[in-house]
Amino acid sequence: MTQVVRRLTKYTNDVLVILKNKHHATNSDIAQVLRDTYSDVSDTTVHRVTQRLHGDGLIGLAPPTKRGCLRYDACVDLHDHFLCDNCDNLRDITITEEVKKQIRDVYDFPEKGIVFKDLTTAFKDAACMNFFENEMYRLYKDKNITKVIGIESRGFIMAPILGNKLGVGFVPIRKKGKLPAETYEVSYGKEYGKDIIQIHKDSLCADDIVLIHDDLLATGGTMKAACDLVKIFGVKKIYVNFLVELDFLKGIEVFDKDIDVTSLIHY
Figure 1 (cartoon, rainbow, N blue to C red):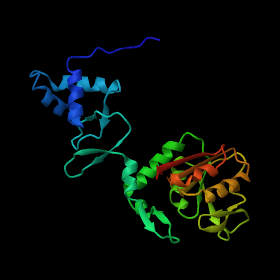
Figure 2 (cartoon, rainbow, N blue to C red; figure 1 turned 180 degrees about the vertical axis):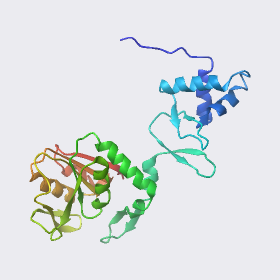
Figure 3 (tube, rainbow, N blue to C red; figure 1 turned 180 degrees about the horizontal axis):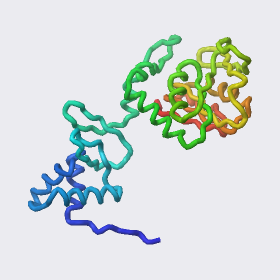
Figure 4 (spheres, rainbow, N blue to C red; figure 1 turned 45 degrees about the vertical axis):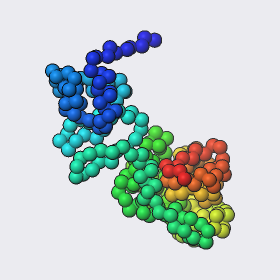
């Protein structure tokens, strides 16, 4: 295999240094700084250098300015940007940390001594909802999912949204007595006591590849029961997704090894 090595121009290192010191600079910004050393450098030359560096993966692209000018980023690792509508400035952010700030802790709910992670404060934020939707779609768009299942009740929020984005149907798993037609059911113990969940007998078939979604993984009892319920149909594959996982409770350990489990945010 032949490795292609680009010849560095006399401006390359200078541009890299400028971008490290002046985050999210445009070609015009870079050219202005370069002219302190190279008075005759043109915007076109700078454009060629930044395009070459971007093509080689040495710099990244940031959101453009309001006027549509390209902005470049010295950081090529995966991250997001906060864009100020008033001043048009950018700030690097890790989106999961920003979403965490929108999730509220409620103490002594539903029982004394429990700290409840309340996602309703994140659900009312459009940026958080956009993150949930897009990240879930990215994770599962190539998995050939045929049905998305949501667990009552907070699993009903994102599961239909993802199903619609994937172009597949939504199936509810509900507490006992809430579904009108014939059902299968599973009883299980959970962190606050015991419960029974049900699914309609005509919801799935053996050819289905399913994603079961809920908002939060704590001890894993509810989702484990949901997986056992879905296995009655003999489906081809089960994927499991949570928005939030409480790692210290080790709920992920209750799942069988053939079930792929992912969570977007970890505590």
